[in-house]
Length: 197
Length: 439
Image 1: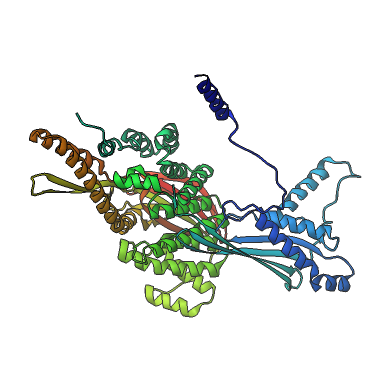
Image 2: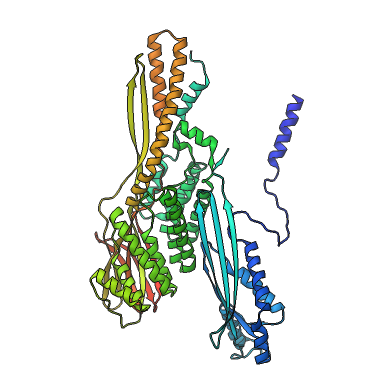
């Protein structure tokens, strides 16, 4: 009887324990849960693109010809895949790496610009004359970064192959010339069991 | 009197397993939905969530997703549809123990996974949600998923299934690309839609909407695809006249009429053997039953100075697709039901035999025999669970209008005014407006 009570007590304790466990992992750990596009894919694409874009001649060519750093703006990265992909994540990664390299300058994107312009209008109305920023002083970008993410899915029963291709292009805004095209492919195999117990 | 041998227990269990969502719950939800009180119907569904828990979770999310779509609560609708999609995918993995139990009793024991066409419709409604929210990029993501699923099902049926292509979603894809300004992609999607509608005409008696024909001519002309344009002109028997004005469009999509429900059809065969014992086989199968007769008629009115009236056309016959898709699956089901009848028959025979060994009384024997047959027959029940809030048909009208502000109204043939609102048409912009009329 005593044993039984003790056993029940243990059961009770176990039953009350938290069912959710959290452990912190390093941000560059590969975590594949569903097989969908995740932070690892986003990071892989950004890393590859950064390595590529900074190593290409367009950068030196531009500095040589204009004796200044190029100014870049991020345009639209179209999601043409089978998943809802947050393209902003790797675009931000890319932007940060480029900016921190000190070789490129960035201007705010279309959405961000709207915010800044609103602020400038506010300043014109409410800020003191010495601190208010004047309009018409924005820096025009020299290059625009645009791209697409496409995917191909092949599925048969519980086997699924996902193929993602990310293409980024840097376009000279004045001449429409493409100065750089980056590409990163990711392929995944996902399998799901037909039976469980 | 009866010893509880395992075989008896099994037979007893047969009779106890009829379960699912009660009719009263359906009635409560549907009476609200058919009055047009979609938010109320969602609330009723939420209150009765327990009934759906476990085996009918997918259904709960399908009903809730669609009712929220009708109620124009797109965020909520998306949440439920994503949940349904995830669960449906997980259910690809079958539980051996549950499957075995279902094999001995009936499919109501299995978690409801959804018919193939229902799985496709999840993405179709998600696409419409995103389209109406103005997020065309996300709508296209959902539309692309339809392709993957349909390909997968065709392969599973070795191409013998009817619902291989969805012409309606192809048409929506075209409209979305055009809304995004990608005319080349739009033209390709329109052309694929037109080809798919030829199959639709043969299989579901749904012809290509006249709007699609206009879209084909216009995009072919814009792309300077002269050969294609002339080919379509010949095919449609009319010439394309380019517009002189700056125009935009509103695409009105009407979910019209009550969708089909499943009912049980059963076959029963009794065969007496040489000893005089009667053996009964029953096979129960689900079958879709239409709840509508002819398609309803609507006119879209857009009024600024003088009114423009455009009648809607049927673009997707949900009932016919459901019937065909189930017919395709039925071939597989027949096999399963046949196998189940045999298994249960063997269990029943074993029970009768064992009882006979212990009982010499012929009357008691006969009585027991009948009881076993009743229990066994009662356990054979068709799985008639289905997505009940689906519309009977999806109708469409594309109204091209000169830039400006309009009073938009949809009027049913019996004079009911379904929707009335003000819309602003901008150049080359396409607005999507989804209107439910399922009552």
